[in-house]
Image (cartoon, rainbow, N blue to C red):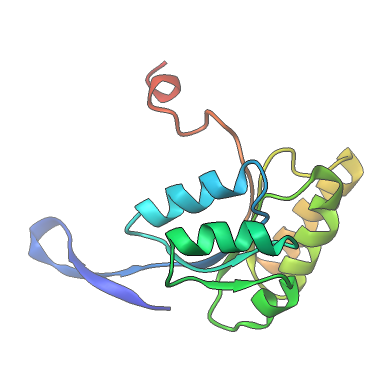
Length: 149
């Protein structure tokens, strides 16, 4: 993966990995995730994907360097993509997350992880078996006020 040199304690150089990601689903919550990810210096957003071309076009104007597609397959076929951020309707979470992990991609799924406990457990087990990171979004997990409490 691409990285950059940073200096740690004692001036020792260390290599920092910058994950390359795609955001899939640009409806209600997806554009917020794209914005936050683009504001970070430790993430490289390479793709945005949605079935609605108008949504893609609206975000592509704000982020002209990002690749766009209406096909998840384009994202999954890209060997440089390390992870996929899913912000799609809940009924799609299980199937899409499973496809992403089957393609070897670390996967973030906006809450809830799946529509059923059975599907959620299956995703968790599959991620563990494949040594992949699977994370479910949580609105307040990294909120400074909540962390302070």
